[in-house]
Amino acid sequence: MGPSGRWVRAAHTALSAALTLGLLLHRTDLREQEERGELLQPLIFVLLVLCSVLLYFKVSLMDPGFVKPEEEAKAGEAEGQGLVIPQATGDVKLRRCGYCLVKQPMRARHCQLCQHCVRRYDHHCPWIENCVGERNHPLFIAYLTVQLVVLLWGGHVAWSGLYFQQSWEWLKYNIFLLLSFLLIVIFTTVVLLLLVSHLYLISCNTTTWEFMSHHRISYLRHSELENPFDQGIILNLWRFFCSRHLTAWEQIYFHRNSEPV
Image (cartoon, rainbow, N blue to C red; front, side, top):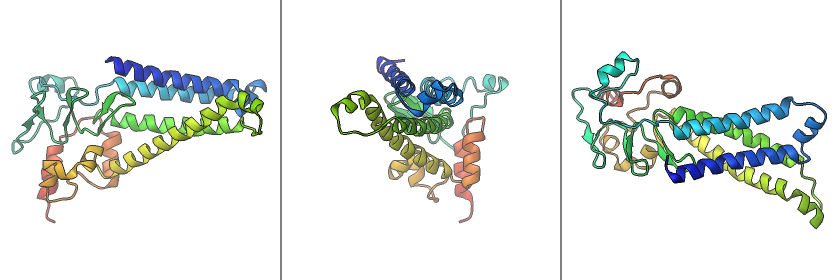
């Protein structure tokens, strides 16, 4: 974990804790429920915040799908342990990465910030200070979903404590809630746009990198199909959320391109 990663994760944790504590201490719906002894909703809210923070750390710290140079030598051993490491078919020649010199599976890309090639590379996310790839992309979507629920609920709670008056005294006692509400609105907009765009790309079985750089990626530029990995919305979603193994994308690529058009 680099120093920048530690700072980003510390900032995320501190911001989540500060906003949650502020919403519970100020005169909001949650505070009034606490005072009446109705602890169910405040408890659920705190648990959701905790869940979002734990998901954040899991996605941030886990292996996103790094391509390791020793994978080919250990393929047999890994299969014996129940881990499937897909290998290319005999007709496919994997190219070597110009940076780390590993054989890149199809849809992998080298991230110069992580200094690794990542399977089914989507993007490098500065907020989690990690790549989003084949292994952690589903959890990244789960994190965004939980975070969106927390933000929407937090925005409602912050708004419930705001009673607008034109006086400096009012602003003095409500500045935290006002700033919290504005901050939550900004974060909600960003997370919502991220979640919607990712769900759309997942339903098409494409990645952010492939969507943005389609014309520069050789296996997409030379394909007979616009998207050779698209197998229909249902199968795309099933493969993304329910598959427990890494995918040999070369097999799908050549199978789809060999189908009659």
